[in-house]
Length: 239
Image 1 (cartoon, rainbow, N blue to C red):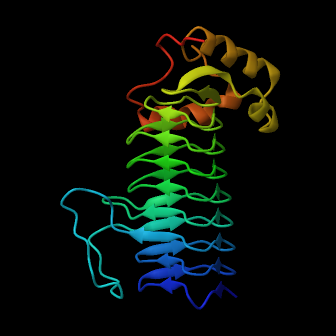
Image 2: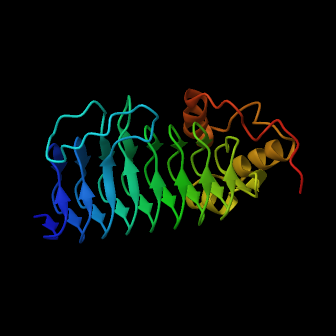
């Protein structure tokens, strides 16, 4: 059974899974789908219109009708206090399963956040941003719209993501720079030492591997399908 604080506002068109907890003064507007066992803290705002010039700002808060595509949050995701997630304009803004969104996170319209992603306190992601499964973004990371962070990547706190961060990369700085591979994260994900060494050498040379190891194939398939426009690899990476 879900637990909804009496001061929370749950609009029409919101579908809640089993055992969802929603804190005081949180607002969720439809259309929205919240998965089983999610925990949503106090003061969150989920499902307001996208911040797009000319977009309709419907003042009928009790209506399920919307020209936008809503929000989807997967099972067992934690959304901490004061987080904001906007509706999508042409696809649902999506947060995967088993994610952690810490306090004051902002996810803009049409963004796609994969499973098991951590967005640390103060992370702000512009519209159409994509984050692959298992990535970790440090405190106060700022992501430019339409940028990508690959699966398993780790982005250091305060980074400004103006170029796409490839899978299993370690990156930080303002603007963000490639600083090697997330070897700890790769090991924890079951990636073998040979594959880690292959990716380490490729990133040091400013390239992706000519032949992607089998244990990394899924992550790089995601990267290819997402069609990164301005990747970090292939450009000079100052220390």
